Image 1 (cartoon, rainbow, N blue to C red):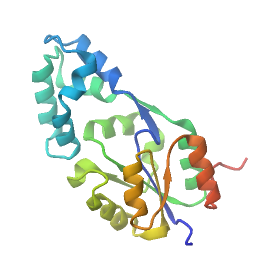
Image 2 (image 1 turned 60 degrees about the vertical axis):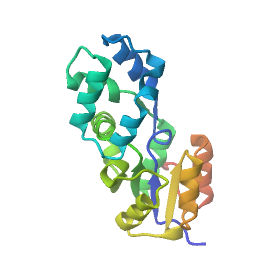
Image 3 (image 1 turned 180 degrees about the horizontal axis):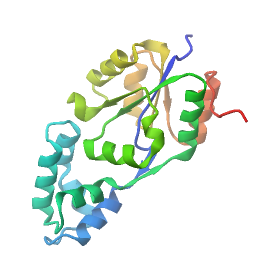
Length: 207
């Protein structure tokens, strides 16, 4: 069995936690159309999916959401309310730091959108310390579409067991395993770090 040479991380629920209800409550509080916070993103799921596929620009997404919600603020204010929903998962941030300290190249591989990426890059310094980023909205496809996995292999310049992939979604992990990748289904940071250590990779920085 080949040891991994690069480590590929999903973003949401792996390196950062998120809660869309925070955004929904903020937006509803400034809405003139009487929207129900618990229904906001479900009601606009098709638009959100199109945005994360890169089929809608950020400007068009904001314009459509402003019109739909009656948000009584600017597009930038809506964007801030929409994107400010993330908190770092510190044990996983520390795992990434340990891998980097020990010379491993690391990559982000995420179904996400431009507003979220801008916000995370601005708020969390660790996010700038990856060797590359593969986003759904830049490739017109979402995991577990094979097109994105092929993009990972092109960008990392590795294939099969040379890649270790961490994701919280079983279907995404299964798609990586089908390509021969080492995979870890994240159920908790502790279990992930143990799985990484069993593969012979460092999961902490030596004092």
